[in-house]
Amino acid sequence: MLLRSGIFQQLLEIVSISNSDMYAKLICTCLDYSIDGINRSIFNKILTGCQESARMYATQFLRTLVRAGADNFAHWGIEMLVGQLNDESRLVALAALDVLDEACDEEEYLESVLNSPPSVLHLGDRGQLLMAKLVSSPRGFRAYHEANFINTLLDKWATTYNYKYVRLMQTALADSLTQHQRGEDGTYGRRSCSKHVVHDVFLLPHLYGSLTQHKEGFSVLMQHDAVKNMVQIAKNANVSTSQDIFELKVAIWAMGHIGLSSDGAGFLSCEGVLPALTHLAATCPVYSVRGTCFHALCLIATTKDGANLLRKFGKIFNVIKKFVCIFIYRIFRHISRSPNSE
Image (cartoon, rainbow, N blue to C red; front, top):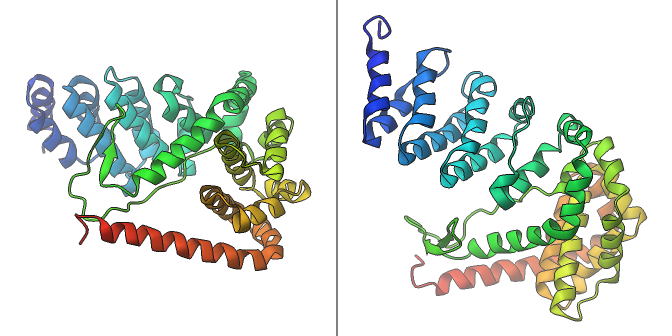
């Protein structure tokens, strides 16, 4: 009835000619996209042809459709989302990248993205992190390996992004304890409607953790010299200078991500990394290194084989639990001292 009466065509004209984003926002959130038709054409027009604020709103609305499991979203929604990565507004492109990163946690959506692997390296650090997630699929790994891109990625992570990863994780953890939120330009503004200081922090994807998810990737990873160097750094555990501490954290995070698979956990056990990490977590005089070890051990414990290997160090984990209790106590003490805490 709406189609025959021309309502859909009028909605399309409204979003095409209106200078206000109010109509675009209202229309894009009220249509049903389960059927392939003019509804999706109207949505695509809002994504590509309206002002920046409307494009941003529609791009973020794609996250709602991802979480709601919209019908056949892998076939039509992912294509729209990938298209937004090339939006003329960097803010819109980064918003699309953030939604796509969440969508790729679902295997169906990840495989849909890999039907036409997008170019994301122009989007900086977050683009590199999404690239790391894409190669976690054997299909994605083969696509980039055939293009001779995997070794380039490994070299770049060895020289740059292993170090950036630690800074990004430390920044995310630090930001979780403040009521101020870091913007894309690096400045901080107060988080609106925030009742509590602490908020969730999600683990960022790591190239080593992605490659260890399949035999082909794990084999290539084990041949890279950077892995051998980080094994030695983790075992030597030098904390003499601030640079030594930082390089140790880089190695610990890398080892933790390698341990995300059974093969990786076995490798760490054979190389003597597991006892080194548990010993550091229990006795290291630098508490931030202890915390990093705890995160890495949690990653290793996500597989059955990794958990079984870690059971050998049960006595040490009693010390680790004590450290965690102290850490949690300090967080709540920080919250209680906040002038805005309830």
